[in-house]
Length: 115
Image (tube, rainbow, N blue to C red; front, side, top):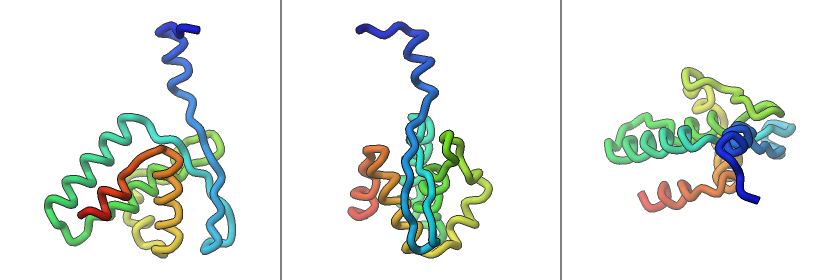
């Protein structure tokens, strides 16, 4: 079946979500599919941070803030709250970051490891 423009636009707003156990926090969270625009913004932010060798880049925290969602796929954290996410324990943040990358079929973790 060939989709029409309107069908594509209607489908495009729906986001998949997935439950992820975070034993470090004693419960579960929801991670979501990010948009193409969010992916582009995060990718540019990551590259700029790596290029600048900035001391406080909060790379993983930015990604995690974009991945965490409610059951409908709406973000839990605003960009202005990334510092709060960055202050959380690394084990849980890494777990969410890795799961979000895998769920979104992204390869940012490989890029971070190279740098």
